[in-house]
Image 1 (cartoon, one colour):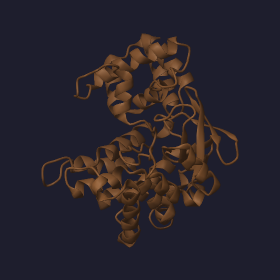
Image 2: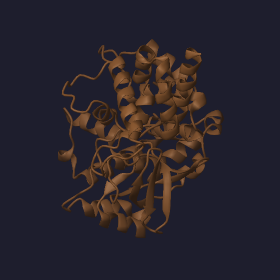
Image 3: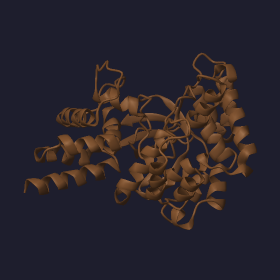
Image 4: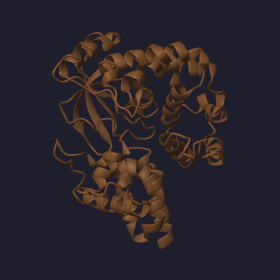
Length: 359
């Protein structure tokens, strides 16, 4: 684990993957590595030249959370304490046993992540003490990310490549890339999160949290008191749900949501094969492009960030090698024009390969 952490801190995703391959299972014979860590390393290693620099910044966030630095243990325990409190106590956690429940907080709780990285300085510590110069050189304004304050926002509009938000504190309109940051919201909903700068404009450092309007207004007035706003909301009729998140590096849509978008009405609980997933991607992409980039109804699942997530999923990429044909180039040309980066760049590259094959 330490050698894998060191490889990531050097910015060497391939070296970390090689270590994973040498020891895929633990002493109990079960898979040793977290599957989402393996997925992001495959994405970073295979798509590296196509990725914007903010992908490295988001990779740094994940590393700052997974580190084994003993000097950070008091802050780690404090973040856990706060997250559990916001959830309503240990009896509100879910898991097969108390240890599993706490692991789920570490991996999937929105408040734990925010407190650990920002309020308790985990991101700044990683930048100063652990990250290599090469890793930091490839990142996008990560020092400014470490100083980002919590903000409150209202979702205004959804488009295939962008989301429009209102900054509740200022009333300003803000556009960010549509990488699934609003997948759990519909226009008019409120959320809190940290807006950060990149070379391409602003984006959310990770998926924002849906909150009631009164929480958003409280955070807009006093950004540093966002935890108190969540504590007050815990006793309300609609408390924010802070657990069960999947924090992506390239896209914020959890894969179960992606499969729901690609396999409407599917009842088979087993995950699709790579070829099935690739075939569904092509089918849904054709339908979405034929609809002229129109969004679905405000309460329907938003298809565009789901398509973007599917394009970036290693299993789907493997399936495309089996099912795609030169005649499918037009589909990827359309997706390359419609989707947010980095999925758009991947689609443009696929279109070029298919056109060359057909020539």
